[in-house]
Amino acid sequence: MKLADAQRIDEECLFTLYTRTPLMVTRGEGMYVWDDEERRYLDFCSGGRAVNALGHCHPRVTAAIREQAGLLIHSSNDYYTEPQAKLARLLTSHCACPRVFLCNSGGEANEAAIKLARKHGKRDNVARVEVVTALKSFHGRTFAAMTATGQPKYQQGFDPLVPGFSHVPYNDLAAMDDAVSDRTCAVMLEPVLGESGVYPATPEYLAGVRRLCDERGAVLILDEVQTGLGRTGTLFAYQQYGIEPDILTLSKALGGGTPVGAMLAKETVASAFQRGDHATTFGGSALVAAAAYAAISTIIEEDLPAKAAAIGAYLRDGLAALRARHALVTDFRVMGCMAAVDLGAPVAAEVKNRAQDAGLLILTVGDGMLRLLPALICTPAQVDDALAILDRILEAIPTAALA
Ligand SMILES: Cc1ncc(COP(=O)(O)O)c(C=O)c1O
Image 1 (cartoon, rainbow, N blue to C red):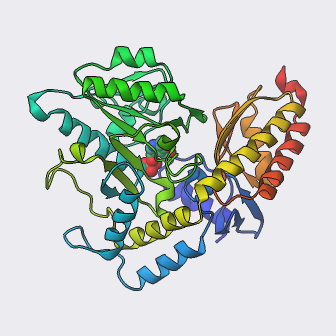
Image 2 (image 1 turned 90 degrees about the horizontal axis):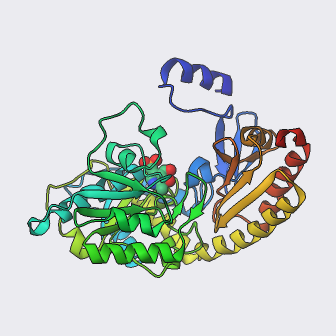
Image 3 (image 1 turned 180 degrees about the vertical axis):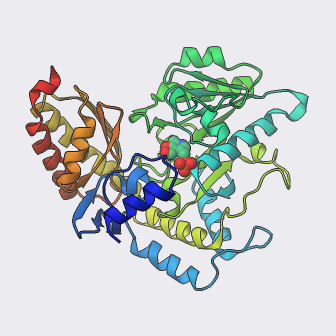
């Protein structure tokens, strides 16, 4: 099948929901993907949205999937399976939360987190039901996760939304102080605002929010769906802030490319869920659990968080040089393998399209920002290649764009 065939079927059969790039990806290996014409692209999106932290088709993940597919693909949560048990032990032994619920996506993990926080908030006959989240956050498209998301564009047309949510400016402790009351069951935050442009929390902010939650009896949910499992330079971003969440959500990198999500919690909070309170048919299914176990083991054993930190430092130097050479680059932010580049004109789509033509895949945020999310296995030479392409493109974009 060629791109044109897939485009026709897409138009005729699929919901019109995605703004697709005219590119049909047929295979991937490491930092590269190939299209239907056998053209190669350097993937600085990790499979689109920060998913393939180990690059495409990592041999350990592929081997685990192959082996598990020949043994058992799925059996329900009515039974025990070895892949799920191994994954649960591995995940909980490496983070601050000793209990895990396995599901299928980031949105679903956040949905579970919100349900757990509500259930916990109603213990002791106290009605703590409200959830405070940040403006410009992104938590997913399911109903509660969409309501939690602090961007009205994702909510328009879907009201009435889930009651009990409020949004405050990010990195503004005074606003959080005003918003958290004795009716608040949870504060839910990304340690780094990812989707809206890689804005890390300040250490004072996260420490202050942690303190407010403790003082007022609310739980702190950290949404590490994008930042988790090494992307920011530590296994979990919260480890760079000297605090621990009560509830932690993960997805993206977790399954090595397969759809897995996880909601983890401290024992005192987790115990609010009783048998039957929550469930999902496919959560922790044998095939994806085996893939996730292989992915996380690789991330830990190969110390990929440290490699992500080193690549981030290299990328930061490269972006500083790019900014020095091009007036169009007005600012940039880097945290491990997460980076955003602010452009002084609405040319992000133009840069992205030209990059694709030159064999580099990147993301945009709005009209004026580029987002780079290379896999944790990215090398300095691949950073050089990506920045050389961006350098040529920025050189070619007429400075009139800046006017
Ligand atoms: C921080 C964060 N939370 C939640 C989600 C939603 O994850 P999913 O698309 O798997 O539902 C995303 C997706 O981009 C995300 O970046």
